[in-house]
Image 1 (cartoon, rainbow, N blue to C red):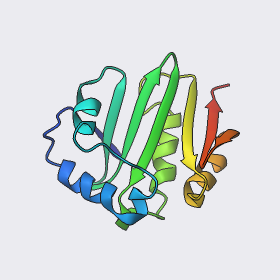
Image 2 (cartoon, rainbow, N blue to C red):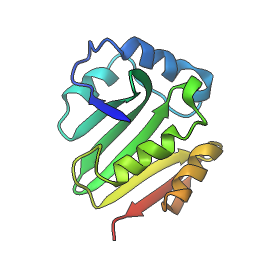
Image 3 (cartoon, helix red, strand yellow):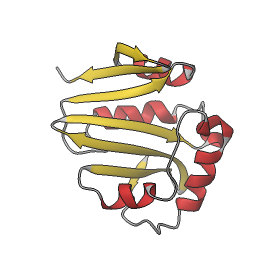
Image 4 (tube, rainbow, N blue to C red):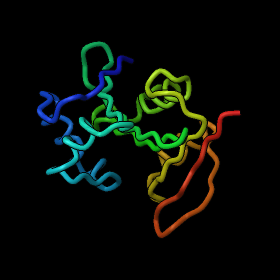
Length: 143
C-alpha cells in the first residue's frame, strides 16, 4: 500500500472519492459535508487525509485527527475493493505508525450495523467501550 497525503481541496482524486462516499455501501456509514470537508482535511493542523493506492490504483482513504496523543480515524474503502483485506492492511499500517504521526491511543466510532468494520476493529485488538444511539465506541491503547 502507498499513502499520499491530500494537501489541496482541488486534488484531482476528489471527484472519484466523492463518488465512493456517495455509493450506498459507504454513504450509509460515512456522511460528509461536501462543501467544507475537503478544505477542512487539506488545511487543518493535526488532520491527515491519506489517499491509499495499491500500485497505481486508488483503493481507499484514511482520515486521521490527532489530539493529545489520541488518534481519531476512519477508513473508507472504495466499493469495488471492499472485502479484499484492504481495511486490514490499512489498519495494520496505522498501528505500525506508517500513516499518521505518533499516538498512544486510537478511538473510533462504528455504526452498529457495520458488521464488517466491527469485526475488523475487534480482530485488530480494539476494545468496545460504549454505545450511544447506533454508534459503538472502540479504543485501542498502545501498551
